[in-house]
Amino acid sequence: MLSSTLTPGQKLAQGTCRHLQTHGFACVEELVPTAGLRVDVMALGPKGEIWVIECKSSRADYLTDQKWHKYLPWCDRFFWAVQTDFPTELLPDGTGLLFADEYDAEIIRMANESKLAGARRKSVTQIFARTAAQRLQALRDTRFGQVFTPSPE
Image (cartoon, helix red, strand yellow):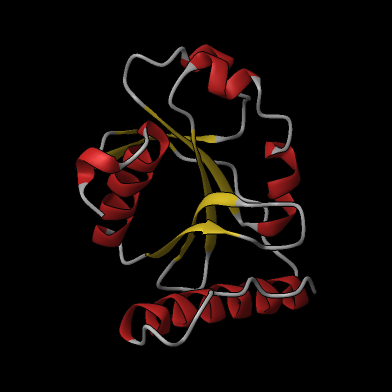
C-alpha cells in the first residue's frame, strides 16, 4: 500500500514494524488474538518474546480507547507508539513507549515484562504464525479468498 493512502495510525504501525525488524522481531499488523480484540501490532522476537504495540495518532484517539488493558494478557510487554508531540504523560506507568512515524521508530521507554504462561504463549504464537501465513498466501494467490481470523484458544 502506498504510504500516502495510509491512515495516521497505519503510518505509526509501519514505522514501528520497520524499527522492530532491526531488533530481530517479525511483526503482524491488526492481529486478532481472540474474538473482540484487534491489536495494532504484534511482534514476535528472536527468543519467542511477544510484544503488543498500540498506535495512537492523537490525544482523542487514546482517550477513546477503552480496550487496551485487555491486550495485556496476550503479550510479554505492552507498548504505545505515538508521534513525538503526543502528550505522553497520559500513558500509564509500566507500559512501553515508542516515538514513531511512517519511516521508523525509537524505543523511548521499555515496558515492564509480564511473561506469558506456556499454554498462552503457544496459542499466541500459533495465531501469529497462521495469520502471517494466511496473509502471505492471500497475496500470492488471488483465488485464496478472504483471510480468516483464527478462533480463540
